[in-house]
Amino acid sequence: MDDSLAVSYQRCRELHRRHGRTYYLATRLLPAWKQRHVHALYGFTRYADEIVDRTEELPPAARAARLADWSERFLAGLAGDPVDDPLLPAVLHTIAVFDLDREDFAAFLRSMAMDLTVTDYPSYADLLDYMAGSAAAIGTMMLPILGSTDPAAAREPARQLGFAFQLTNFIRDVAEDLGRGRVYLPAADLAEFGVTRADLVEAASRRAATPPIRRLIAYEVARARAHYAAAAPGIALLAPRSQACIRAAYVLYGGILDEVVAAGYDVFARRAVVPGHRRAAVVARSLLTPPGAPVVVPGAPRRSPVRLAGTMVDAVS
Image 1 (cartoon, rainbow, N blue to C red):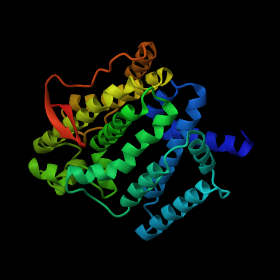
Image 2: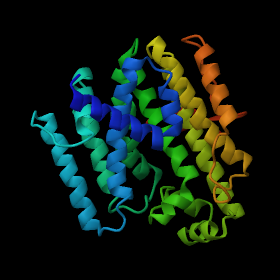
Image 3: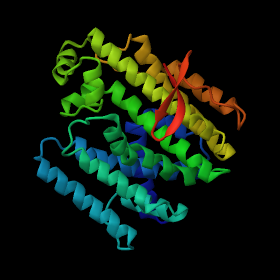
Image 4: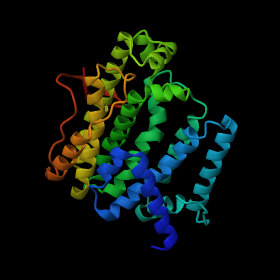
């Protein structure tokens, strides 16, 4: 590895360490040679997200132009052109090493562009369309790096895990997303529970959820757990040395939902965070769990069949 490529991988690692604490902690359970490739994918996705979310002082057209310019440089790099960028050499190298599907990256960039113009989603089907690029595609990008005994069977669970993680973030970050002018909870769900966008804004300003909002959040938590249930069988299909990493990430992100439940589904009073001592315990248990062991789905004393993303899965009811 030449010096410029090593520097690019290191830059991606630093982005991952600073901004993706839960995922970074889980990634450390992978073999060292795989870690840098996960850092590269994180760096790519994080930087695109930064263009969209951390340039709010710019008008939308300027932000769109900046994202389009970076996307064009990435596509030029894929075509073999030299790139002058601190992050792209690492992700381009990772794509080449694992022959990753270019369409996953195109889908991701399309979803990032949506964030510049789309501020809400009428239905869950509409939100799934967005998350297919912003989350499910990341799951399938990761799969060749993690390795699998049955890649075809592991593909849909990997997509479902992407959905689960992103919906967990949307539930936790309602107030933060409102600050950016976006609501990721479907409008149809808000209407079902008698909640308006103005109600969410008021709850964010008061730092307290109303009973209808709590019922809405409980519904979304159940939906997220259905995605976790659909993802669980895929962990045993991963390469044995990759299972501890994804098992830890699965439990840690599911633990965010546990914190939301413990707060009475009030996502405005404080940001749901898994305590440090629990994070350390999860990592230790994941390392000690034999490969192939079944995964315990978070939450869920009672279940009912729900159709989710085209498959029948069990959902907490």
